[in-house]
Amino acid sequence: MLEDRERKFVRQSEEFVVTALHEFRATENPYTLPQIAERRAFPLRPVLIEDFRSLAPDQRRMIAEAYYGENGVAYCIILNPADKPTEGHPLLDLAAALASELPLRFPLSHPMEGHREAVSRFGAADGTLKIYDLDTKDARVSYREQAETSEMFAAHNDGLGYAGAVEAVAFYMDSPPLWGGYTYFQNLVRLAIDLMRSDDEAFRALFLPNAITAIRPRGKGAIKVTSPVLFLNSCRRPQCFYRVSTGEYQIIWRKDSPALERARGFLDSHTYPFALGSSFVHFTAAGHCCFVRNEAVVHGRTQFLDIATPGPTRVLARKWFMRDPKDAVYKHVPGMEICHEYAALYPEVFGADRLVGEWNYNPTTDQNVRNQ
Image (tube, rainbow, N blue to C red; front, top):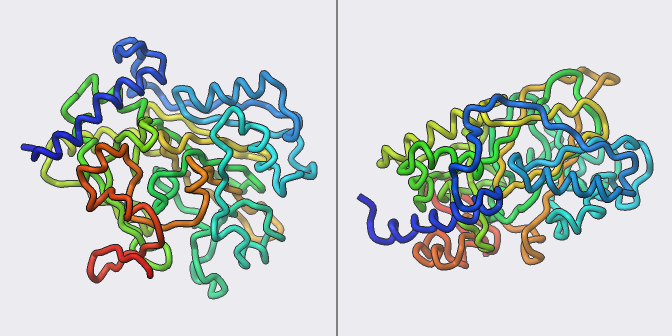
């Protein structure tokens, strides 16, 4: 049995459904939507862009429709990636050109952009974060936040420690790998409507305030975040928080709810590479890029293979775009920006004091501690 404030907290699921159905143009009736949970994975069709500095109206329209559509991803191929950008990187020029169609007005300057190791490998900082295969034994690298391994990276939202305020994520292939590296996507808000139709109790369990906990246990980026999987954010939009355990990330689900266990099984069965209901892209050349609706969509990447210089080396440029100007600064917090009337039920988890500053997780005490 849920306690009283849990029941009140979970009631946001009603508004979540109405708002989500409106976004999917379902006239508030979930049964007018085709089910995607049994749909085979499919490759996204790209919008071809002849010049990233000049977009035609029909290109803007197609990109916006893809971003706000059922898949939540706009995939583009820039055909002139070697041309000189005006904003430091072609991705930033493209984002500036699309700022009226997509939520790209508040880019975050990530603290690891221009890290000396990335600069030594790829040249002067260009306003994007470089993600590449890094030998973790390389003593020259003080932090790993700017790089990953070539192994599979499981499904997740970007921005752990940013309170769910990363609204959009952009990826751009600077240099492709020799082999592999498929990026896959699942719109959990859309998928959740299918779950509601088949198991309403499991769907509602995803709104429990402590349904899922994600822990990054070590280093400067150590943080512990507890959250519902589905919720209304501070703008009353449907949002998800989800991550599969992988590498340094530890994921803990609440254990006392059979309905939540069923919901977890449903989500886990739809968030691996090429799972039913998912979509994917394969960045095979410089200029391939995408804009991901990070509030609703989780993404991951399959294994890839590089070879030693002078062979192909996978380098991905990434940029985060925030929900509000106040979020476009570095922070590292344990809270989540949930609609105020529901966050107020759990101030110890979602209070305003847990949405600002720089916190660090102490694995010995199992507590987040705010730096003074």
